Length: 550
Ligand SMILES: Cc1cc2nc3c(=O)[nH]c(=O)nc-3n(C[C@H](O)[C@H](O)[C@H](O)COP(=O)(O)OP(=O)(O)OC[C@H]3O[C@@H](n4cnc5c(N)ncnc54)[C@H](O)[C@@H]3O)c2cc1C
Ligand SMILES: Cc1cc2nc3c(=O)[nH]c(=O)nc-3n(C[C@H](O)[C@H](O)[C@H](O)COP(=O)(O)O)c2cc1C
Image 1 (cartoon, rainbow, N blue to C red):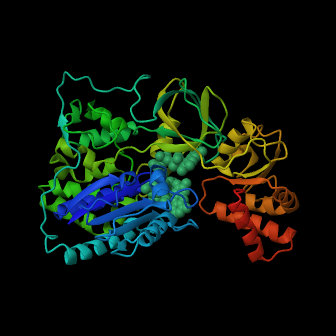
Image 2 (image 1 turned 90 degrees about the horizontal axis):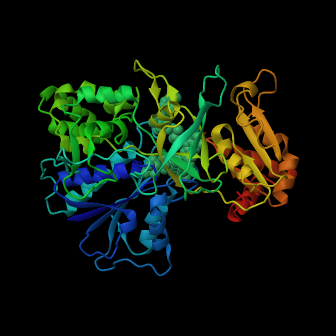
Image 3 (image 1 turned 90 degrees about the vertical axis):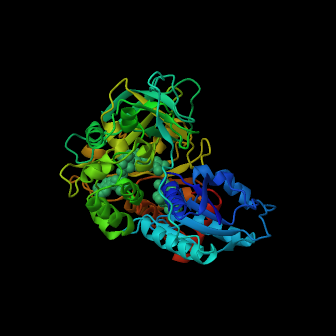
């Protein structure tokens, strides 16, 4: 059987799932290829089974890397192979706390069926919100895939092949100069180098949440629009780099290069030390593939058994890795004998590449971009506090430091000089400062902001003077305790008048429950002011959505 796996992924989870399926199938001697979804060709008659892995992002939207694929398959005249019928399985990746749960995967499955494909296994729904993570749904899907292959691949399936590294690395000739980060070197597509102009604390010193306000220079020719995001490529914290270097058996001063064509967006040659510092993620939680691959190389019976336990079951791995939020670097320390068996070729199989993190741009300028970053820092069962990879990196940046950046387009529907209701609690206010400074919102616009207290985390308190800003403080002893939803309802007449005048409603923020809470508040405002039932208000809000007003 010839299987082709396609993936479309915004932040890397679905790609990781696709790699896991690839690893599983190749281990079981199934001829498998792994290709981005934009390269899908459903007329290729050499492929007997297509596995399509795709996530849902935005508000029920396709990931950025899958837009052209989506446009292609949704075209009226798009057709796929009919003889023999295309056989497919869809792995949908999403989060059940979103209203449009796994919308893209479900739509893709529906579309393929309409086009005449046979879905040989029901659409596999992977839920990031599940207490065992998306692995829970993925495990079940892989089990169904296995059952299908056993009954359809003429008995070949259970022949297990020895593991071969997926990414072919080799020690490079020491005369080859390693790549270094400098102002001229653009390491990835669309990536550019910016310098830190300032990095200051945006919350009061005594507030538990540290948030930083940063400005980066932009090189000539790099521009953004209001609502766009700045992607920041972080580097690992030095203490974890040291943990990894101490645990790994390699001379980290050696330079490695691709043996064949690059199979990852990583510009080599580079020293192993530099790869550990700035290219592979040492802060993330070890996933199943980490234990699987380490077990493949391990010659120590006890460690190998434990690694296999973690790579097969889910509960033990959850207790060991996810619950305490153990990092990949720390996990290396717990399997010293197996780690000492790791060849350099395994480097990029065992560690995922660092993913740049998006931050809403909070200013308007042709020379610089600013962001507001909430630092992720919390405690777990582990001795040392847990940190977020990118925010920990951002926290320690100093004026003049160089940073790898890129810009992605935002998803707001913006009309210049229009009237807006902008709702952005916490760092959700960031894109609205950009909208305001670019004079996209006119003076009749409204901004709803929410934070804990006036003297703790009231971001950009002196901005937005040319529109109406209403703040909700949830823990301020000097005023009524409120959330944004409540001040929206409190100002229902004003909000309703603006909605009736056709203003555009924009919502931004981190909390997953907030957009639903805000939508409910707006629904209640409409129902109350227009004397509608809940259902009628719902229909009215959906109509606004269809008209691009929210
Ligand atoms: C379109 C978009 C725009 C964004 N804009 C902004 C912005 O303007 N400002 C901003 O600050 N962020 C913004 N973010 C979020 C940002 O991209 C990062 O996800 C965030 O900074 C965390 O990244 P990190 O690398 O520091 O943490 P990571 O290393 O990615 O770790 C984050 C993970 O840590 C875990 N975690 C965090 N806190 C806890 C806890 N208390 N207990 C247990 N586990 C915990 C969670 O699983 C979380 O997913 C935006 C995200 C998107 C998608
Ligand atoms: C900004 C944003 C919007 C999202 N919107 C949805 C959504 O509408 N429906 C859904 O099921 N999941 C949604 N998710 C959850 C993602 O699908 C989930 O995080 C998934 O693991 C991402 O996979 P990827 O890294 O391959 O893109 C969203 C996540 C983010 C960060």
